[in-house]
Amino acid sequence: MRKLRRKRVFLVLVLALLAVLFFKSEWMSRWMYPIHYKEDIRISADNYKLEPQLLAAVIRTETNYKPSKVSKKGAIGIMQIMPDTADWIVEKSGFNGVTRDNLAHRADVGIEMGAWYLQWLQKQFKGNHVAVIAAYNAGPGAVKRWISEGTWDGQMDTVSRIPYGETRHYVQRVNYYYNKYKNLYPEF
Image 1: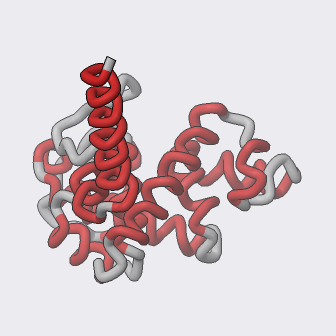
Image 2: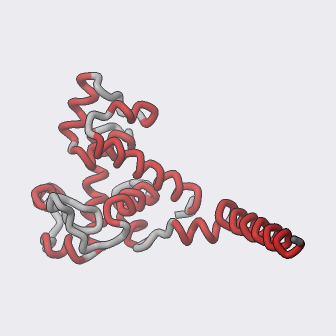
Image 3: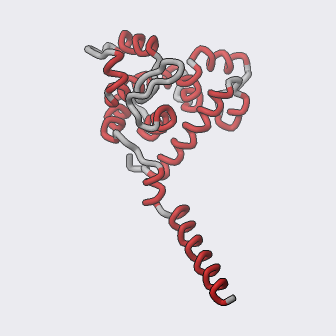
């Protein structure tokens, strides 16, 4: 009886210690929510006047930092840019010597192109980063239509009104990681 009681007490203490480490440890949180390619993200964020945490949150949601990932729909690179959008970005931005192959295999190119596109979306949606996130996933035309028709107002507290389930979930995930990164990496 005493041995069983000691084991239970020991188990409770171990679980309590793990809970403290899990919920209160910055070390554990940074281990669970790392940011890879920090320097590339920082440079691109500075170049396009974006918060690096937002850029990192989009990357985490899109590919979890895997630069050569290709989606079922054909999006490529670390930030999952559709090939037609990539061609448009290259044309509009004036990137020289950038190819789809670069986008698919080089994180720095994918981050730079994705950052340029996010900046372009920021201008389209007057800095409303929630609408920007939605537009990154669903396209700016769809988001402008939702807002103009009153389907969705572009705010986080009404994200449940986004008509596309995938986009609704996407906005929630990016916003979750964005807030995590803001708390864990404020100096970023």
